[in-house]
Length: 118
Image (cartoon, rainbow, N blue to C red; front, side):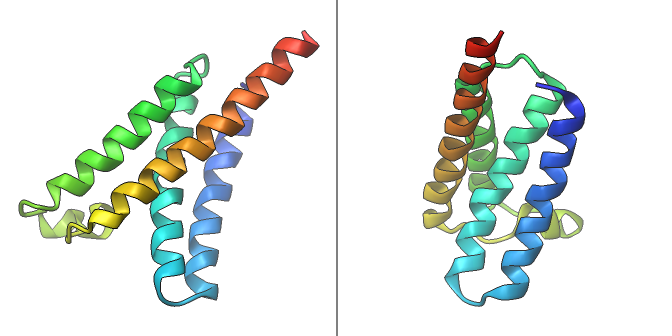
């Protein structure tokens, strides 16, 4: 995958996260934000390792998201709380998995199309 496309994807994911927060209240932006947080990690993994297999990128992004969530059971330094959060919330684990699964599906399909074309 071309790195400029992946970089644009990162920007779009951040814009979607900000847009969801601006447009809705309640659980929708919270859980959409969780899925988008994992999607951003997924995209960054692909940006760093463009030939990464989709299942590896999904496992890394979900695993890192889960690790950050479980780290919230301990004390997160105050300076990192805006990025990493501060409160463990079990439903977040599901939404991280949803984000990773959707990214895996999209990435897998894009790679399959590239294989068919070339």
